[in-house]
Length: 142
Image (cartoon, rainbow, N blue to C red; front, side, top):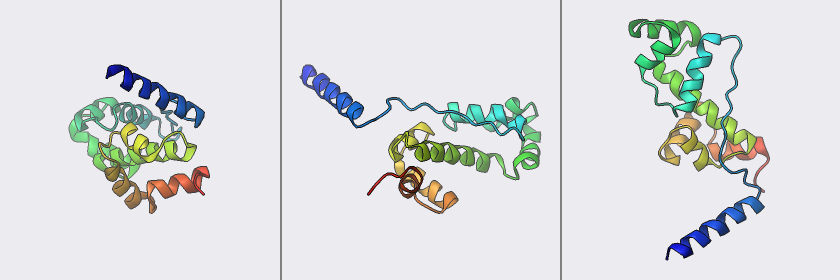
């Protein structure tokens, strides 16, 4: 039985290569030069799939936990929760725009356990579903 699953896995990988799948998703982080204070926080949020606590974020920004809300408001006009969602959705949009990932792969890459969770947040913030965004930006679909 194990040989069957291995051969199916090999067939699937070969099919993906033929279909032009790039393999594992690599996330690159574009640093906003106007906000160098946030570059390290953005990087951590992407690498940790959004799982950075407020205390860790304060440490990364070099402020006390009590000063984090004020500092983030100064830099982003958002609270920490909003900013964390913003970074995750921005990263998902980058993956979808480049055509490097399907919606499900993008959801997993940015830390959403279900595609539906990404669909809801993405649609609310971007005004369009992730699938429609991917089709319109990357030229996918018919």
